[in-house]
Length: 177
Image (cartoon, rainbow, N blue to C red; front, side):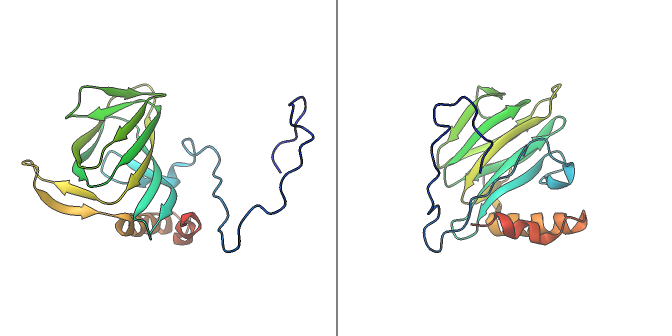
């Protein structure tokens, strides 16, 4: 039950009794995702880390908080599927575009986009929620494919990190839907 209502017009409304359909998994509720203990942030590159929030191995999708505490970089990559981003704090952008995302900004990346993610020096860390569909295809300086990063590599990376910092690899299993 959520926090009790006091003056809200719906305070006497009763919740439904059948919340989940048969075989449905429960929701994932994670409080204060951007400000948690830094052990929850998995190093993604030397300067950027990722806090997984939701993972779908069967759909090759995930949602995370990407964070850079100082100037950061996620190397050139290409998305064969769409990506959504919402900026919580700090500043970030892509070398290939003419905008800079700040707190409160939303970005929709179309399928077929290649770019180089950069985080700026700022009084607050760059934190943005990303919903990633499909793999990232790592690119070389000429934009040619070099390697890939998908949900399965993400899961392995997160499990290894959580095990190493004492949180336990099993934490990732609770995020999978």
